[in-house]
Image (cartoon, rainbow, N blue to C red; front, side):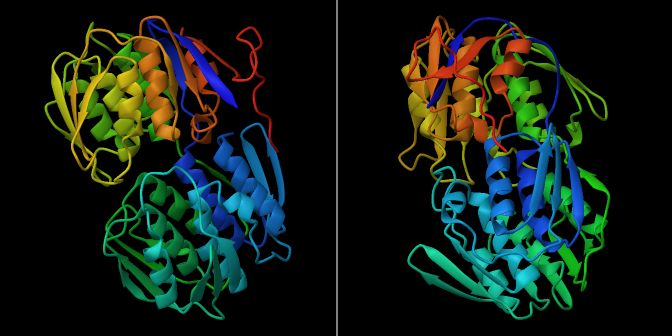
Amino acid sequence: MRQYRIRGQNRIEGELCVSGAKNAVLPILAALCLNESEVVIHNCPRIADTFVSIEILRDIGCKVSFVGNTLTVDASGDLKHNIPDDCVTKMRSSILFMGAMLARNGRVNLALPGGCKLGARAIDMHISGLESMGAIIKAEGNRLYCEAPMLKGEEIEMHTVSVGATENLMIAAAKAKGETVLKNAAQEPEIVDLARFLNGLGADIRGAGTSTIVINGVKRLCPRDSHRIMPDRIVAGTYLVAAAITAGEIKLTGACPRDMLAVISGLKKMGCRVLTTDSTIALQAPGRLLALPRLVTEAHPGFPTDMQAQFVAALSVADGRSTLRETIFEKRFSHAEELRKMGADIVLSDNKQFFTVYGKKTLYGTTVEAHDLRCGAALVLAALAAEGETIVTQAQHVERGYEHIEKDLAALSANIRVESSAASSEQPYLSLVAG
């Protein structure tokens, strides 16, 4: 196991280029199964979830090369319909291979997906949507057995906004017969990037980024040279908060500020000075952040749930009382108890959906555990501001979404290193190399 050792109260300052987006690359990697030629993906983040997707692609018969941040995938050969259980259970977005493989092969078998434990996160809309398009899906134990001799276009209205279901149905509909209309679709920028990728292959998708997406199925997708993954707005937001929580100053390049309006607005309300261009974000933090009277997580373009934990960490040292409501995931609260170990004053409602944060002047270093990806990011941020040394265990969760977070933060003047939890503090663990 890996852990981060962080000595806090160094001011974060400097310039950093934002990596490719985790939540954009994963559906695109699944969608590669639709294509029957070679595609090159640029700006692909070297994170744990990317490597799991690559393992799935290789196991089902794709040829994959991953050099630097450029990924080349050849899906022209025959693809197997059985997806390995050990890959699927590591990552929730593996469910996206269901729509892709049904559209490609008319058949797929896979285990129920894993990932961060953030609540029910039911896949009922994935299943019901694909069934309405003609798929026959049977659940036996922990596995799904899916067949679809021919997917057909359908009008599908989702009972709640779901990013994953929107992506899965978009991918499947790209090669379905006829027109598919997705109503109450998710509007996240990553869905726009997926549509841009599929349209570049010859798909016919309109309305991505709105609540209604129309897909006219095509018989065959065409070869294309390459696609560049959009910048990761959650990574960018995390590093902005790193500067904010340490009274620092940062400039992010290769960013997309228009996708981050809610996060940028929140930081401004906390007293930060933020300047943007089309592809850069510069932030200068005050000596102490201001509390936020009310913050609510919502589907895009609202405040993203994936930034909730990081903002709770920042509000733990803000001046005043803040309230935050989590509306997307019913179990996204594990960071609160860990932050309390560092001296944070956080009160959760009985249903764990409402956070009341009473800002303290100082947090204190101790040993805390990253229970999931964003919990780990929040603890790293809190450690940057804390007095003394903090050890964040279970660093592998953080590595699911951040490419070398310790190197990025060290380049911004943080005192952080990654090491093996089984080794002494004098022997840092070497960076994970996969693929």
